[in-house]
Every structure is written in C-alpha cells, then in structure tokens.
Length: 309
Picture 1: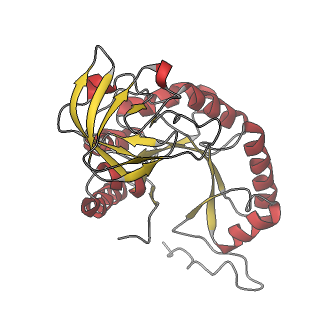
Picture 2: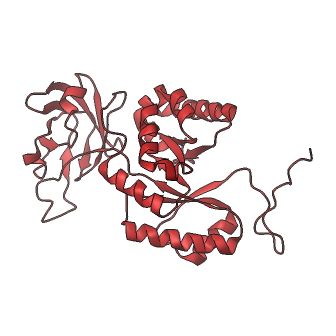
C-alpha cells in the first residue's frame, strides 16, 4: 500500500492543505469567534473548535457554532466542533461585603485557624475565620491531615478536625494568601461523591445535541459509569457524538484503564492534574496515558500548561 501523502503546509500559496496527523484544539472566545478569524485559525492548523461551557449562554454558543460552520464550509476540509462541559465542582461562597464590592478579599495568614462550613445560611458571609463551601459531604469526606486547595492551589488548608453533624471542618492555613469569592476547591487524593453530570451539564449536553456538535469534552471523569451516564443523556439518536474523557484528578488516574475502555478518547488535563498530584509526576502520568491511548488506537489530547515544566 502506498504511504499516505506527506502533509503540506496549509499556508502554502496555491496549494490546498494536505492531510494532518496531529490536530490543534483551539478554545474560541469573544475575540476569535468571527467567521473571518475562525477561517484564519483553520488555515493555520486548527482541527477542533472548542467551546468552554463554563462561560457564556446557549445563545452565545449557538452564534459561535453558526460562525464555525460557515468558516468550515469556506475552508473545505473537516473541522470538528466540541462542547466542553463545566463538570462537577466545589466552590467557596461569597465573602461578607461582596454585594458592595465584588472584588472584596480577605487575607489568610500562615498558621491561622479557619472553619469551613456547609451551612447555607452562611454562604454570603465569608470571613478570614469562617468560610462556606458548597460541597455538602465535605465534613464526611475529609479527615485530619488532609489538604484542601483553594483557588488553583494558591491557598492550602490542612484539616485538623471534621464534624459531620455540625457540617463543619476546622483547618489551619498552610500558606498565606488573599482569598476572593466563589473560588474553586480541590481535594487532592480524596475520592468525592459528586455526580458526573450536574443539572447544568445535562442542559448543555442536550443543547449540544440540538446543535449537532461532534464531540463532548467531559470534565472530571473519574470512572467508567461517568461516561455511561453521559451516553444515557445523549441517547440512541446522538450515539455518534464522541465522548472525550478529561482526566483531571487522582481518581481518574486510578481508574484510567476502565475509562479508556469506555470513552472514545482521552484528554490529559495537565493543569488540574498538577493540583491533584505532585507536579513532578504530571509528565509521568501524561506519558502513561498517551502510551495507553496509542496502544488501543484511541485519540488523546494533551492540554493546558504546555509550556510550563
């Protein structure tokens, strides 16, 4: 059999772009969603249009998809459209004074004590001593000595004790930092019982089906059943939509083989993995996942913090 044609530069004047063996995924935002800019990105090598559903309305994303389809028609070669789900997450509440000043911050000093609570009556009254978190099972999930990372690990807390009955967790601040409202929370090396698909994810996936997207980038996949739950939402009519499982924490790493077996492809989410597992082990995990995907012939995407080492 003749070898495949060598890929030609898509920018060579007078020549159509040749087949590509490696594709670039581009996250499309307000400055890049016009038909003209999307076409330029495709000519420069974009193979997948990614829309981040952590931000924007369905109306906004529908406009981006319409523009992408126009650009694809002009480009003349297949380019996929992917919906990236927000996924399950844990966040802090609002700080006291947020209504008057949305940028209000509190200083957490190393060695200081802070109590985390799941009491919803306190979700808009956060201080340097008392902070609401929206994960109801937090006091049952953590134990003495566990670490809790806030705001992508900029602030670390060490658990001293937890009271499931009161819904509180007493911690000590490991490193000083300033904390704002509604910051993301990571529980490294702790298995959480959050659902794979939030109510918002469910709506977003159904919207994606209506818009005929090609792929779902499924956030925070931790086990085989998470993929199965998404397939159930897609239904028989949309079974052709590919599910790319984003591996973002240690539980996903532990269950990687069963996730790989169930999913259509894998995304190595380096940024989140770097919070969940020691940074120096990220490249080892990355190489392992890419190698296993290559063995079974499934696509793998390596994402975020690509120029950091």
